[in-house]
Length: 387
Image 1 (tube, rainbow, N blue to C red):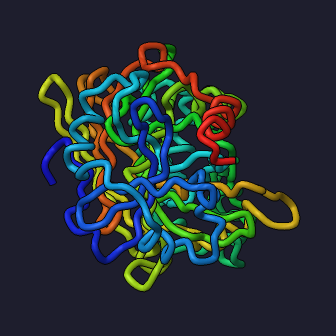
Image 2: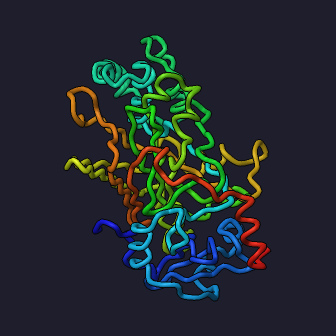
């Protein structure tokens, strides 16, 4: 796909929903039909959250009456060029009132990298030597292992005996998944927006992920792409700094649209999804990485069940990052330092059927501040007689 594209060349077969900001109006619920962006905001579906709650969400997205507000690629171009605090027409993150949850260390490679961060205490200078030692011990142990199984418990005991057990391996192969809140409601950014790094971080990376859209009754209703921007040095210093490592201004990107599950795209497609990540630096640096959902250690439905149930409810639904296989170890600069972002990097995450999510890296302090919250949304919708 060419740069500055949402990567959806044929939207006629699927059910796609998202959000745009319309000048003089505010946030609107939209769907895609044959390359057109159609505003379907109504009293029945004033928010994407309300649409996801419908039992016929996919059919509704395909048939609901609305107004064409432009073609998709023109909207994408406008979104890339416009300041994201402006009143211009632009793409937003395709969710609104849903809680933003995330799962960590759901792939063997990411488990190993978290152990490395922990043992390096966030110092990238130590990572290369630690990686070599840890991989020599745990690589074969973690291959094709099912989290929470008897085999996983046996491997745990063997790794404890070898002196390499870690809290990250506990949530990686133990019975309980790591599930945390990635970002506050309405704080995520969409296609074309800047994504933010906390200024204190010197070792960080993108995390390309498939993200589920889940209704309040715990049913996965669709999927989208996400970038769970990660500060490796901050979390490596202490797992108790997870909030500082994960939740910063513009540190959560979602989009370009939610593809609702129907006959053309289902959870089985998610289970086999192949993600491609590219990072293009202003210095000519180019990185390509991959993540395969087929290698996840826990089934997506299990991750949903561990997030939502009688133990925890989400009345407006939630979205769930499911983790990534991608863990960048390729040096960028000094030997042994591994990968870290530089300001101006353009990050593109692509998967067949879900399009591509494209964002530019800045410091979180230089990204447009988050100013439109829940109160603003309620006032806006009430003013438009949608509540």
